[in-house]
Length: 364
Figure (cartoon, rainbow, N blue to C red):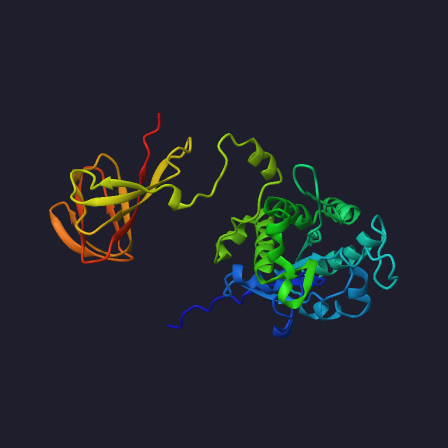
């Protein structure tokens, strides 16, 4: 009996400008987010067709004939993602400019009408935020460069009952959370090429923005989640900076050199060790993480556990005793000791045994 045939993948079409379009290897590391969309989707369920074209507005994309191939290709069940705005704003170029309150949404409506006529689902996407920061007294401010154009897309989506991915809002929150300097590696700030471009993305930025797009798509159609092949836990909430400033205990980075504590082997173990208690004073942290170096001849003595604990061997060799059994351990080995079990660890050989350990912290 022949196996049942799987349905052909549905297609998602991307139309838009240079922030989404394809680029050849000669333009590396420049990429559009449409180039990375497929990496989030199961190819057995979805095929991405990226028709975005650099330099086009909602108007010039149609007048130059770029929409014509979609009139044949779009079909029932497909999705059409429509992202314009960057070039529609260029008042100095009458072949691309669209006045935002009437002309811009009128051109966008052409894409919506085509998709619906073909039985496809149109989704409007506000333009990707530009990386434009203004130096402030306490924090750099991201400038809103799409204002009326993004507002026009939102209004059209609401009026016509069309799904909306508010990429301008999502990417603005993402940029604010990154900050001015930390956001440069995502856009085409490439000193080796003499480029400092605040509009276009390099590869890591294209992946990040594609993730935002898929996250917005998933919010419109939660059934998409079964077809995802990677997580979409990306971006930041709009109030991320306010939350960060209000934190009583801030996030931080430390170096182990300032933490080193020379100690005898714990739990009755032999020899000398060096402990590195990471974030021991951080309030509200629900776990303990530390590094311990067992110098030659050192060990952690046998003890019975009142909590779960994980050891991970970073380097060196050791002998691990767990519930009466003993085995050799080395780099890459991870050991879980459950509540009620007994364990001990002995350094072996000439090299220090370096381990990371983690366990739940008793909270008052």
